[in-house]
Image 1 (cartoon, rainbow over the protein chains, first blue to last red):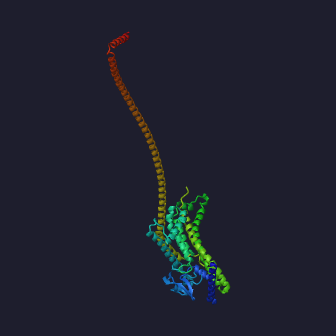
Image 2 (spheres, rainbow over the protein chains, first blue to last red):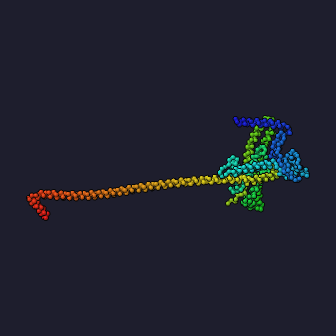
Image 3 (spheres, chains in turn green, cyan):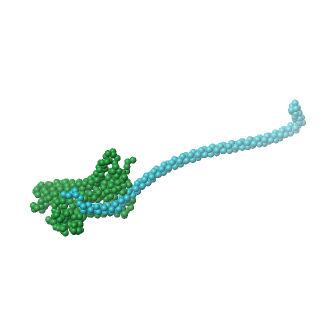
Length: 353
Length: 166
């Protein structure tokens, strides 16, 4: 009984929303471009677009920091919105640098300047970083105030402790020894919580969440690079011997270093897989949810019955996808941490006796 | 779309942000949490070990107590047995002594009785002798009061003496 009522209320809401959407989208120029919405969200942008209200875009302007041929430029992203030009810099409309800050080259083509603007993703990264640091420091504050040997934390500190110890004891410790665990746990825990929090904030559909941070290849590239460095900078003799002079018949490693090339390929493909896995999973999740939401607007033109029923179906799928994304948010952070731990553990393995 | 092309600005910021976050959390965050939990785990382990030890020592104590009780019981039994033996021997000794004392007393009494008896017999004999002498005196006096009697008596005595000498 109770569920029936909830479903009918949701359906009615969807229907009324659809009618409203139909009203606002009656102009022919308002053709819904799903691809634009999708890639506009999944990609990065200079301003943080929050919503559209009465036909006006509500966007938080973010600072742009660009070093072009004319030197450093600092300005807000609102200066270059809607095709405006600022000190010779503007957003490219097409081509390779679409929606990126460019300047006009002498031959009329676009030249991409050195650009370290605080984009939407950077702002979201900063927000995630601040949130993560405050959450963890809040937890450690409990430990400073209490004698942890006498009592266990409750509430939020207890939750954080549970998660930290879950990652530490069930993920990192089995992958490497007790000794290495102490050394690498801070990095792996940071990676786990950073990815997990970013993923979760990515699912939150409104400001300050909703940015596609871990679904951006630059972010996952840096994370994978950290693991790559951790593996290769602290790999022991055995690890390097396995790469440079493995125990295989001589003709496989000399004079043509077949095995070395294969090992080198494996060395690079491991962090590469980490990078692509996280990026692709989160990006695809965002694309799926956005696509489902877009269906509501695409079908808005097809009359109230179709769009209403489609809205209900889409909503149900959306709820399912959001639940799935919650799961994926955790699983991807888990997998990244676990594989990193395993790769590091392998590089620290001693030779079999 | 350039989704697969990492943006240099984002890489730059991500590196800086992640490095800062890692630095802060690796220095002030996670090691404190894991360290504290490890300490607590160690403390709990210690407490469990101590409890086990206490339990063991308690079990040992119970065993010791049992042993002591057993010993005490054995001791008690031994003491009781000893006491019983001593008592028995004492009684036996006392009885023996009593018997001996009684025997001595009886002997003494018997000796006394015999002595008394003998003394009494002696007295009686004396009395009888005196009496018989008196009687004899009286008889003789009476017989000798006459001449015939005197003569007869002398005769008789001479007979006796003759009889004795013959």
